[in-house]
Length: 178
Length: 149
Image 1: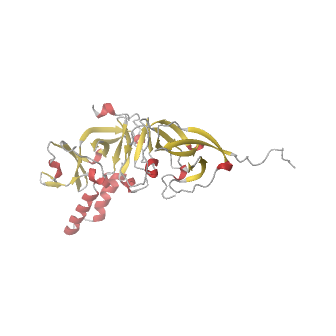
Image 2: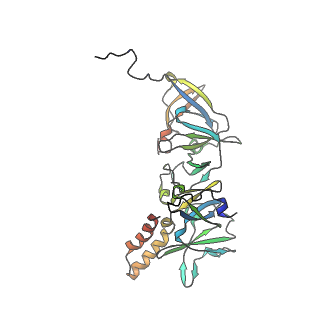
Image 3: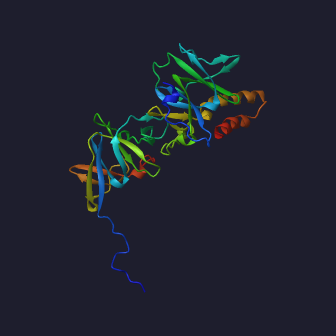
């Protein structure tokens, strides 16, 4: 079923810019990524994404969110898709089981994480969207690319060409601009 | 000079509490009816990875999404029955859902004189009352999920 058919959150007002997310499945759960950071999607039939991807000479680290989020994915990686996210010089392939497509919602339909969640997870998610009789958790791109940001910072430190603070701000300011 | 018209200037203190008595894993608990937002069939919860103790899922009720407080985990019990119930409670941070046993909860009015301090510390409680040999805690909803109690 197309994402547009599953969507329960269509744009109704032209006065406010809609938000766009890429809806995926990891470990049987729905996760959303901010579409403005999407650089591409790749599909693998044999789990080749378990290694870093090199495309046109650029090495993109694989991000296994299932591990970071402690989501069980046993036997689900036979057919894997990779969502390439990027913000500035930070890029990474996020392993997902399935990319459902893009979903546009009115900003009011991006529900905040309930305040009862009081741990570091408040920085992991941007919010929640009603999707397919369930809920898609929208991930915070800055958190997703956190490790890649560390790598870029280490590289620039050694090269001494760019400010670490400027790179960090690149991801953060773009996230806040949404 | 105005005179009092005979009615008390202070509202009367209630002499009793209206409680909803329910069970989780066979363990009997009570909650003030004022703290209850509703009871419905339990829908499958959606896990939310995180590190908040006992709050690790949400449940969707039509167009709203509520955080789930895992009272069964607090009590180290397993919810009983084939068709669980969803107890919606009014928390100061917003409503929360609690999965409870399928046994239908009952309403009970309890005289204040029967309410005692809750001796155990396994759940936050405003007090307790005796039900036979059993001490039934009256949950302090505002303290659920707020750390140690």
